[in-house]
Image 1 (cartoon, rainbow, N blue to C red):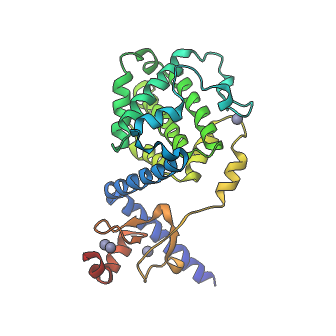
Image 2: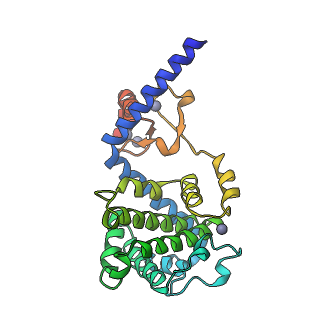
Image 3: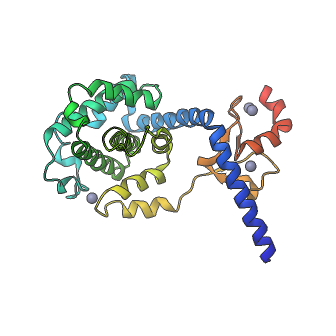
Length: 281
Ligand SMILES: [Zn+2]
Ligand SMILES: [Zn+2]
Ligand SMILES: [Zn+2]
Ligand SMILES: [Zn+2]
């Protein structure tokens, strides 16, 4: 019994090591696939919400969703009294809100199909001159982040995960820019960290916001979401996972056909002979 458990542990350790290596070597391909998938998911969500508005270009729909203007979202946007920390700021000046809106406008303008880093960098370029005082001041950047956390939390509570996700991505980018440019605690923007939010499921998102807001508004949602782990399948019949069931977020596609998923490059390799005929079709 004890031995079995140890073997299990060793196998787990080997598996997680393999996974780490897999994540490293296959990151690019993997990211590309996941990004695509995340975009598809968001399009679906939006389609459901917006119904017949589908003919409008993407950025216009996004803008109207974000309720742009240089002001705070209208008060009915906050159906609770809580502003999730934003109300605690005494020094929140309007420039920071204008900045966030300008950044979002530029970001969503790019968001039609482009890579997430392209969107963020383009939005930074678009706001760099006009809002230099915000970009150069970590306190102001923090206010901008609070604003995004507030609206993002509210989006999340309303079930608008697509916009909540964008708020989280931008907030995390600002955190990174503070760390790299202003506090210099980091040499480079950590793009995988940003992608983690962009690709993340509801669980990742709720964790992101809940960790950063001072109130308990997301506690119920967190408990609700925590219990759900989307399950995926590893198609390698020899896979060591019971019934080949693995967390969906940890699976990778066969990049040739995109019809099958694996838990690791090892499993993909092991299944290649079996899979090849159908992959070539
Ligand atoms: Zn709150
Ligand atoms: Zn497997
Ligand atoms: Zn296939
Ligand atoms: Zn294939």
